[in-house]
Image (cartoon, rainbow, N blue to C red; front, side):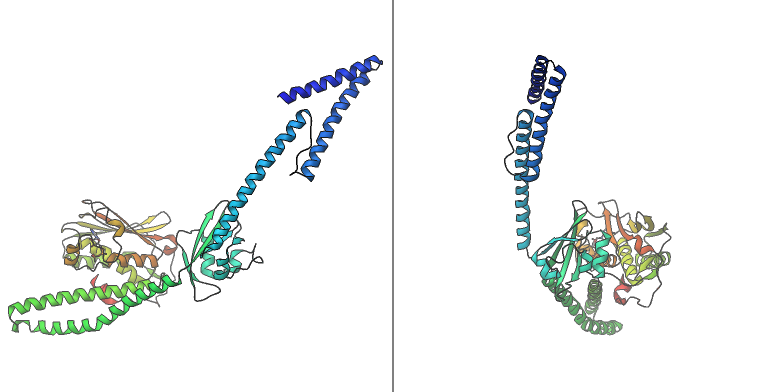
Length: 447
Ligand code: ADP
């Protein structure tokens, strides 16, 4: 404000001074015009100085100006200095981030909003074969061409990481995790999980091998025990009881081995390639009949079907998963309970629910129920003949069908197990039954 008043005074002086001078020589109009022209000339001169300063030497000190121009030059200079400082601070931060990303063993790749490569660290060159600087600006799918990566990249659903082998070093197993940030830009983090994968493979192989090796001796034991039990009346009574217990325990061991083998088979491939059309009404009816046999008529079993579509997948696996849930409902609820099997549409898919009105499960156990051998009441599970692997099998079967399990329960208020299938699994299947499941029949017979 102060400078503007000054400027007005300057105009007033010039007009009055030059006007007065013109009046003295008898040309007041010319005097006024000259005053105004001088005022404009002063401003044009400052404007030229400002222009020259901004376009030629913006980092040097501004030219000296008078009145409002002096203030304007000072303010612009201060603003520019602050901007400069902030910029160099920002550059420093970016440099430090890049240095730390550079030192990381994991690959870091930054993509712009179009999916073009913007920046990456040297681990990315080693793991993914990116070349600096020639690959900058290339679309990521031109360089990472694996169809699985392209589908994952384009789906924009990055909740789960993607596991692939390295495009340049086939012996490396890589885990890709994408994150969206800023203006639709993407950050790709790639971890080398070769060692972890090898350990996991060793664990799976070990369990599968041990289970497999146990199968033959167990079959021999079961065979002999069956033969002896046919002549049990010739044995003393206390031996008869022992024989019966041995039969029960070998049956348990057989079930356990069958479930372990089934789990290890389910684990070897994360996604089922079978796309047979599974008609739910028939399948649910057959499971209901099996459950009624297990319950010996002491439970009420109901089926509610609101979803007309069928599932594309491996029928044996889906049957095994649903049977596990229904048989659990029979085994863990008191006689007289009602069990409902409900197949109904849901937002973006459909769900199969197994609902019972039994004792329910305390909330603390729910997150751990699908872990192997996790039991709420160990004594009770063993008594009911459970292996502790049932819900782990359900979880794996559903994963292989792009589905997931949700569990809702409260103590004393029954339990609800919901298998949620995505819409993609509900489209009409091709009916290719040639790859029918090769799961272990023993395990399915029991459950
Ligand atoms: P198990 O072979 O012991 O049944 P599961 O993995 O099938 O193993 O089940 C894990 C545990 O979850 C069971 O031990 C049981 O305690 C609990 N559970 C499963 N289904 C139900 C149910 N419908 N009601 C109450 N508890 C259940």
